Image (spheres, rainbow, N blue to C red):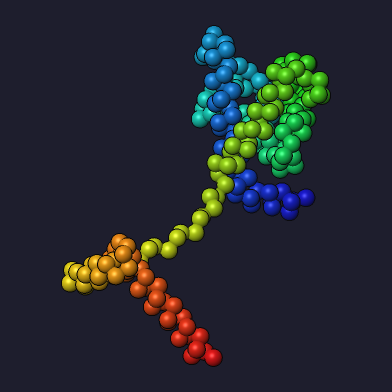
Length: 209
């Protein structure tokens, strides 16, 4: 059991996602609270956290450590929900609610209606659990190491002096007259390079044989 717990703590992505989720989730909740209930600004909102009543109506930076620990517990549960049900939002949300009930069953300040099974909750309450799932997925996207895309080899440039370029242009004009079509110096240069490459490849095969 201890080994399993240690292995979980060793997951840097999990820990980073939990920290990211907990802070942003709490601040988003508080922002919504104050928008809906402006009279709550500056007013204590007492909740039972780790056996002690603490004020949760504070920014994350000044939140009581016991309240922070509760937020992180919710974050760990959201992480586990996404891990178990990565492609099933409702199942993940149900798991988030089950874990919320387990964490808050001793808190008498919570409305009894919230302790119903997920399927019997009103949509507005289900949306809160869904938000936890969505925020954890966003947290994982934010903290997961970005995959490096292989860089394309830089195109090599060939420097040609003015005298050589003049000869190429002259050869292009001569060839244009001979074939009755416009041949540019650039096209002539490319054709020459391709011809040299083809000859070199053939020579290499002959040498190998």
